[in-house]
Length: 225
Image 1 (cartoon, rainbow, N blue to C red):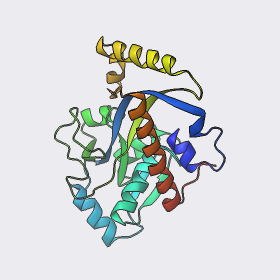
Image 2 (cartoon, helix red, strand yellow; image 1 turned 30 degrees about the vertical axis):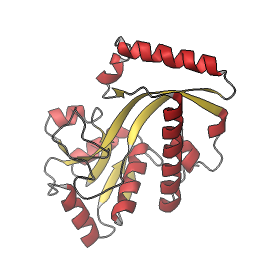
Image 3 (cartoon, rainbow, N blue to C red; image 1 turned 90 degrees about the vertical axis):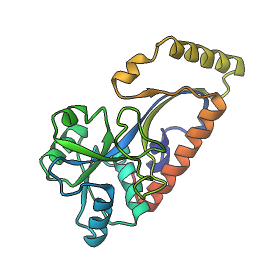
């Protein structure tokens, strides 16, 4: 939703078409490299990108994907000139990263689970405000000197604009009850952490995401039309 509103010239909906009910879950993106990459840290990536402008490549699941937006935000924040190599989906992007054809990739840990288990890729940093309990040894980008780069897959429950507040409150309460009883446990199998917020907190988060990715799309000249 946020990326569509940020990068599409004529999105088929507006943020005002919805009212927030609750966040459901979130999964951060990680900076990954092939296991035999000479990059041993985030600082290595940044130093090499600055010393070799236009030479460091990053794979994405396609133009306008979250992997693309995350890498674009990283490039803007580090003031580096990285080369975008879009693929038709995550699978081919990960395959070429493993093969060493691409230098770096931003992706969710769950998507990289098989490659991590097989020792084919390494995670250098997580694009989140704090370390993940799933990968506690992986530092945040901020810890390694790159602040302000946060990118995550998230799911939110929204309702049509004009939905009565009592209905929103009922939906939020039922979702909270389901979460407390393990009703969202399936999300964790996909590496998504359940994250239920109030309607007001959800609205603030979604608005901040739309504003952030709109800025990134404009500065990085990303369009998915």
